Amino acid sequence: MEIVNTKRILIAEDERMIGDMLHFELSSHGPQVTVARDGEEAIAQIESSPPDLLLLDLLMPKKSGYDVLEYLRSHNASFPVVVLSNLSDQKEQQKCIELGAKEFLVKSRVDPDQLWGKLQKHLV
Amino acid sequence: MLLSGDDLTERFRRCLLNPEDHMQSVMAMIAEQQPVLGSDILLKEGRVVQRDYLPVYDEGTFLGQLFLYREVTRERRIDAAKSEFMSLASHQLRTPLTSMRWAMSMLNRSFYERANEFEQKLLLEAQEGVGRLSDTVDTMLHISSLESGETPLTMAEIDVAGFLRELVHYVKKEFQDKQHAVSIECDPALRMRCDPNLLKELLGNLINNAFKYTPENGSIRLEAIQEGGMVRFTIQDSGYGIPTHQQAHLFKKFFRGDNIVDKVIKGTGLGLYLVSLVTNLLGGAIEFESVEGRGTTFRLRLPADGDC
Image 1 (cartoon, rainbow over the protein chains, first blue to last red):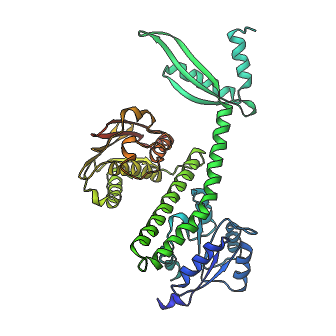
Image 2 (cartoon, rainbow over the protein chains, first blue to last red):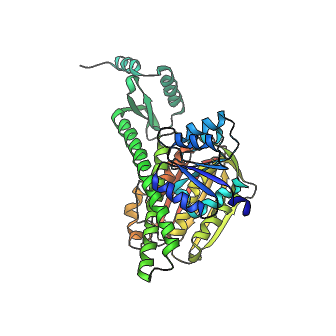
Image 3 (cartoon, each protein chain N blue to C red):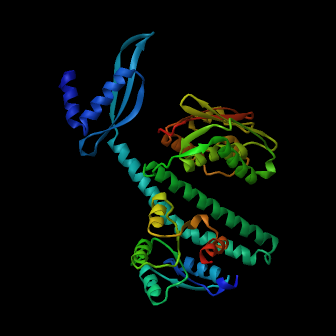
C-alpha cells in the first residue's frame, strides 16, 4: 500500500503511555504519525496542517474529543475522524457519529495489532 | 394515635407525587384481581414506597384486597449510589487496564519467540489475566449502565431461526474442542420484535454457558416457538448442572456453582445476573430446571411484538 505510506495520522490522546503505544504501532505500518496530548493541542495541529485521519480520544483535558468534533464540524473539515475511547455507552457512540465521526472504537475491545486494519479503510 | 382508614388514605394521598396516576393504577388492580408485586411509587420530596398488591382468597372465596406499602427511599438511594460508584470505579479501572492489555499484547508479539518456555508461560498468563480482568470491568460497567435505566431500547424485526444459527456458529467456534452435538428447532418463518443487541447478549450468554458448563461430547438443544403473544426459547444442555442447594441464588451477582469452581472453568459470575437484568428490561420471564450431573434447561419467554 504505497499510497497509505505517505499519509499522515494525528492521534489526540492524553494518556502518555497509550499515545506512545499508538504511535509505535501505527507508524510501524508506514504513515507519518504525530500525537497531540489534549484537545487544544489537536486543534492547533489541525489548524497548522490538517492530517489525512484523526484518531481521537474523548476524555481529555483543556478541550475534550467532543469539543474537537464540534470544532471540525463548524470548520467543515474533510478528513475522517475515528474515535477511540474507553467510554462505551451507546449514547456516547451515537453522539460522536452525529457529530461526524466515521467510526467509534472502544479501547478495551480493540487490540493494538488490529487497529491499523481498522484505520486503513478510512485512508484509501 | 389511632387513625381511621379514610384518614390514613387521605394522609397518604397528600404525600403522593402523582395522586391521579396512583388512583388509576389501584382501580385497575382491583378490577383485574391479579397479584402485582414490587411497584415503586414516587412520593413528594424524593421519597419512594414499594407497593405489593394481593387479592386474598380463602378456598376460592374472595375475601378482599391486600395492599402492602413499604418505604424504600433509603434502599433506592443506596442502589443509585452503588451504581454510580460502580460506573466511576470501572471508568477509573479501564484506562490503566487498557495500557496493561496493549502493553502485554505488544510485548508478546516482540518477545514471545525469544522467550524460554517458562517465560512464555508467564507472558501468556499475564496477557490472559489482564484480558479477563478487562472483560469483568466491561461487564460491570455494562451492568451499571443497564441498572441505571439509561440504555434506550432499539427495536428491530428479528428472524429468530437465523439469529439462533448465527449465535451458535459464533459460540461453537470458541468451544471447538468440546465437540458438542447441537440441535436448533425453530420455524424458519418465526419473526419477533426485539432489541437485537440485548437479545444477542441474553441468548448468547445462555448458549455460551450451555457450551461451557457441559463436558466434552455433550448435547445442546435449542428451541424457539411462538406461544400466544410470547416467544418461548428453550436452552437445554447435558452438562454439570447446578447443585440443588444453590439454585435459589443462580441469578445473583457473582454466583458460581460449587461443582464447577474446582473444574477450573473460568467465569465472572456476572453472566446470569446480566441475563435476568436484560430479561426484565425486555419484559420477559426466565425459569430453569437443573439436575446436578445431568444438565440444565432454561426457559425464556419474551414478548413477540417487542412490547416491554
